Length: 507
Ligand SMILES: NC(=O)C1=CN([C@@H]2O[C@H](COP(=O)(O)OP(=O)(O)OC[C@H]3O[C@@H](n4cnc5c(N)ncnc54)[C@H](O)[C@@H]3O)[C@@H](O)[C@H]2O)[C@@H](O)CC1
Ligand SMILES: [K+]
Image 1: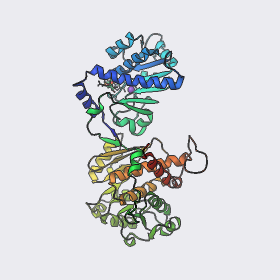
Image 2: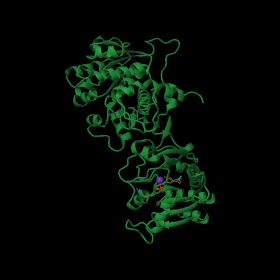
Image 3: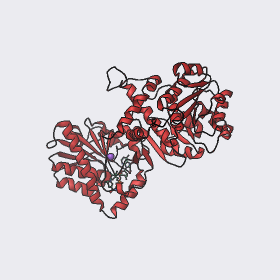
Image 4: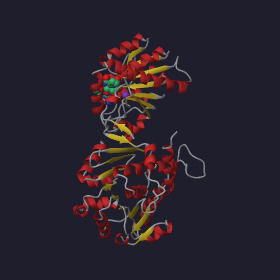
């Protein structure tokens, strides 16, 4: 897992670092790392470094200072560097001096011979003739979208952009993008990842992210959030050992589906069948459909007849009527870990008394999408999805998995895991039913609920990606991909598990 640190945590770490290393030294380390990545990008893209042109977009703070020093380093490697100053009177003085000493030039963004957008001719020329642009507009102190002049300059860039620390216009804490923002090909950040690099649209705007240590990493406290990675999921994914049997690898009960919605039962049960070697019991009105699709499942008509299980997954397609409510109460009273999804979240939202059935010692996982979250919490998750998930997890003493392009999973004790899918292939009907089955199966193995949710979310998004790109069948693989249904996602689950397990093999 990779740590993710808030801007405040990073600022605190910087202050501790400055106590032993002067700030200008730290800034030049940061800039040197940026220059190195830019040289690599120039070389990849144009076949060389010397003689190429780089434009720096320079804002009012230290982020602009980093860009100016990076420009100075590139200038020494024979690159033609022009800094476009967005707020000339507030430009980082030492950085500007460093660039000029190295032979770089600086022009105001709103200079002479301005066009109708107010952009000066020299600034316009610098951006349009560059082979690469460095975004030093704003960094950790960013608030809100790009201002109009910066937005207009960014709009004119047709070459790769390397963002210093984070893509400007993206909220550092939440990854929200509420107006014009830089879309970087590469982001060079310092010390460790920040929320904007892994959350929602911010992750997309960040492009490839590389972390330069520059001495800050050692000063960082425990991360506020952790990002799942394939190798860890693969290492921890439960597989049967020599002493295992069908009971010891976990028995999961699936309470899903109805006569009207048998598909939810088939999808959730199928996910559980494929997730682990453990046994799967199904209880509900879709028992015949489940049996005919998954003969290995022990299916009964009601939760009361299901027999012993180590965890329950409940909700998809059970309906909001009396029978659905009874099923949910039975499962919550069972004393087993429960993953409650879909209709069960709606029931819990509209009927306070359902909570009374809950065994307070058994872990509860809730897996809402934004609409279900709003029902449960009284308002939508808003821009700060980490804070929203954390608050509701604590309020209900539950593990809360907030669905979305970036899945955020919060434990009641405040720990947060993020799965950055970076693509929207799982956004299809029935996909949530598959996730519920995966979580239930992992809970039944005894894996801690926060991790069970994280591992399930990771395999789920990877399965969608593999299916969308045709990476699971005999046909040709596609770079671009095509939309998939939940059945294709479900069929790709074993491929995704194999892929994460392979990622965990020693290289
Ligand atoms: N503190 C340090 O010494 C270090 C900081 N580093 C760099 O310094 C950056 C942080 O620098 P600062 O705290 O000076 O601030 P920034 O450079 O992030 O922002 C400067 C100023 O821009 C303005 N601003 C905010 N949002 C804006 C927007 N949307 N459009 C235009 N202007 C906006 C604000 O007045 C803000 O104070 C980091 O992101 C990193 O790049 C690195 O050099 C490493 C060491
Ligand atoms: K930036």
